[in-house]
Structures are given as structure tokens and as C-alpha cells.
Length: 459
Image (cartoon, rainbow, N blue to C red):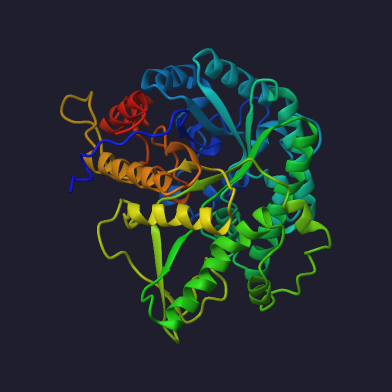
């Protein structure tokens, strides 16, 4: 059999190749041109919450260097660029008047991208909620869902003539569970009921924004999830299978089902009743959430294995998982400590294709953190581990396509090293190295590898 690491594979004609970033992670300019504070500005200044007290005040200074960054994307051959809009730049207090200077920046960025032949793909929310909205309840409040839809329309009004593909939310799992259950992300709340309220109001916001954007003429619309490729440690153990089903409900089906089927799973609602009376779930909400979408973004990094272990404490990111153990990685890991298993991505994509037929998919994030820096020349950044990671996962995507999955594109995470949330600047996901002292960008070997993949439409 041909060695899979050397076997040539070609992707379907028209497969879209891009890279992704997020506003708070790269823009900087945190107090410029009328931008208001976000929950991450507040959280990063809370002692002990972020590695070394790092903030996104400067980050990659993309706000001022976007022209050079877009030129770099063009040099790499990127066909598309997925970026997020900073809500606090557009409506500094979350509601109220639009800040024209904030929209002006994205106006310039979109024009620069289009001028270089790069398709802009907009994400409306990648976690930087205006702090004033959090002060009024954040995603535990129904009002935030409506504020999000209004904000989405304001952005579309300015950019809709040049942006065709719109994503409402990025990884609502993280916003809800990491922000309101475990508290390891902004706003740092630790309350299971608040987490489940946040899940619902994030999804309601997605549905309301979808309705509004459809009415405004958007034809390519979706949401990005980070589903867990969760498996039982022992597939022959009924207890392990039940544990995996519960975790799958909390991490996957709680999002998949209302978005793609128009209703929450009954077993998940029964589980949530342990923590809440569900008074926030109103008649008609699931219909709003279940508006048809054109593409489902999938962010994937690592698999998850669980087993039944009576007596063990629950995972704080999955309320109600007492007696379930989340197994540590068994093989090689990235710098985040995440297991590397490309085949799990194939299984995940096949599962979505089987359980939710007719869903068009896009890999909107995939990548790995490794602590690689410039060599002795200062001009090259060898990162063979990242190249191997990308090679394996691109082949996993191709395997899924060969098995009938409707996968239309791939966006590597991330274009460049950036602010990695609670890890600060301690973890580097970029295919481009960033010297944070000088803001010099150096494409890594992985960037050159990815550029060849794009040029050849395959490996």
C-alpha cells in the first residue's frame, strides 16, 4: 500500500483555500477610533486570568498593518480570508448609535482583500462582547440576542455589497461553557444555569440575525461550531457508551439539533433541568434558531475520549458530568497538550454527514500550536511538526470527501501567531511567525507548505 504521507491527493475543483483570524486576537488598537471595551479587555486585566497578564491592546497591530498583512496573504496564494468584526468597534456600548470609524476599518480591509483577489468571509461574533452588554447580563440575557441581530444588520448595511459569505457566531460552545460554566474565558462566570442560558441566547441571536440578514438579501450564510469528536473509551462498555452520549449531547447535539433540525434533543433538555427550569426557552425560539443555513463551519483540533468512572468529579466545561472521566491524550500532543488524531476528523465529518444529511460543511479552523521560532539566520522558521499536523488533517478532509461528505473548503488556523485568549502570547498557532516586539512577520515552513497545497489544490 502506498504510504499515506507521500500519496498524492487532489481536492475537488472549486475547493476553497483560506486562513482565519479573530478581531481581538490580532487587531490591537484597543482604544482607538471610538472602540469600546469588550469582555476580553476586562477579563485580561483581571489578575490571574490570563497568562502573564497579557492583553490584546496591541496584539499583532493588524489594525494599522492590515495592508501589509493582506499583501502577505496574496503572496501565500490565499483564496479567502475569514476574519471577525469587533462588535465594540461598531457599537461601543453594544446598542445605540453605530460608530462610523469602526465600520471604516472593515470597509478598508474588505476593499484591500478584494483588490488582491481574496474573498472576504466575515464572522460577526468571535467572543469580544461589548462590556456594557455583559454588565446588563451578557449572553444570559435575552436582550443580547436582539442586540446581536441589530448589530449584524448594521455591519451588513456597510459591507453587504462586497461580502457574500457571512457567519453569525464562532464556537458558541466556548462562549457559553468556557465563559459561564468553567469561567476560564471571559466573562469568567462559574454557574451551570448561566451557561445553559448563554447557549440558548447565543443560538437565538444566531437565528434572529439569520432572519434579518436573509431579509437583507444575504444568500451565503452560516454558523461555525467546534463539535467534539467524542468517543467512548471502550465501545463495548454500555457505561462508556452512555457517558459518550451524554457528553455528545452537551457538546454537539445541543447545537446541531436546534440549528439543523429545529429543536433541542429531549435527553439534553432533561439533563439541563437539573440546573434550570428552562423559563428562558420560549415558544417559537427553536423555529427561529432552525432557520435554514447554507454552510456549517467546523473547527477541529483534537479528539475526546470519555469513560464511566463513578465517584469522579464532573468536568467544569460540561455541567452534570459527574462520574465521567475525560481521558488524557494517549499519544503525541501539540503545545496545547491536545492529542493529534487526524482520523478523528474524518469520523466527525462523516458523522455530521450521516446524522444531518444535506448539510454543506467547511473547515473554518484547523491547526496546531508549536513553540517554533526563527533559525540562526533569522529569516526562516522551521516547523516540521506543524507541517505534519496540517498534512495529516488535510488528508483526513480528503478521506471524508471521498466517502461522500460535502466539504467545500479549508481555513488554516491561524494566519499568524496571535493572542491566544487565556494563554496570552504563550502559544503560537500561526503559519506566519510574529515578533511581538518588532511586529515583524516571517512566514514559517508551514506557510510555504500550505501555499503549495493551494497552488496544487492538493498534496
